[in-house]
Amino acid sequence: MTAEPVDAHTVETLVADAAAAPSQHNAQPWRFRYLRDIGVLRLYADLGRTLPHTDPQLRGLHLSCGAALLNLRVAAAAAALAPVVRLLPDPDRPDLLAEVHLCGSSPPDAELALLRPAVGRRHSSRFPFRDAEIPAAIREGLCEAADAEGAQLLFPGGWHVREVLELVGDAEEWEAKDAGVRGETARWAHAEPSGAEAPSDGIPAEAFGPVRRGGDAPVRDFAAGRPMPDRPRASFEKTPNIALLGTADDRPTDWLRAGQALERVLLRATADGLVASVTSQPLEWPDLRWAARDPLSAMGHVQMVLRLGYGPEGRQSPRRPLDDVLDIV
Image (cartoon, rainbow, N blue to C red; front, side, top):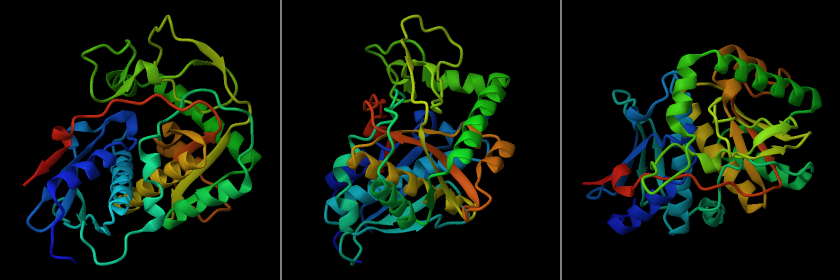
């Protein structure tokens, strides 16, 4: 480690990029604390922002915080820093998800630094994509991005895509019958138009995308049956490009690694001119999640279903003020 701690302004810049990460229902379930004397930035789970019905095991929370951690690493690399990361450093503090020593002695990660421009451009797109295949070279690059973080990205074949889409439909039916899950979605997804006093978290109505009137794209309808009279309708792609992100094991450390892999894939996709949305619906029900895996693959546990393609960029979702997510002591 180098002896000189990183200054507070740089830390604020790094955390602002970290907080641009995607999170389940845009709950943004993270907190950061910078110990300036020793140059260590800690990432905590914000347990007041859990989704007890949708995410009872906190797997989604770990994925979200892992994505924020990857953004932090990207921003640090772009600032010529070489952070050293320890996941779950204290067994007695499960909410302490990572310690980041910002002043490592290795050279900055040049590949991560190249992804920095994509951090601000990456937004989930719930709009129709073109019915167009993704070139093999781009798919290969996305798989390499997942592999670099200790995860696997798989583009399933036709039969498996149909099965995953059927599982999404099953999950939608189960969710419609579960009052707890519906209420949780309604709490975080704001069907009314944003105004001057719009919340700094959750999903604004403008980011819902149009109502699907055709096509098989697995796009979650965050309206959850609530009336939105001015919301447009549109036909979505008939043959969506689906990818599965997964890990060999299924522990909290694997969830954190999967979250980092997810964000690295999404940033690489953004840099390659793709847009993306993710769906966790079939993974929120244990029976459906197990059925989503490919029995012929080494991927033991599916962590996220991605929809990738070419189309309009997504709408930006709100972010909490930096003072709400960062303490410097």
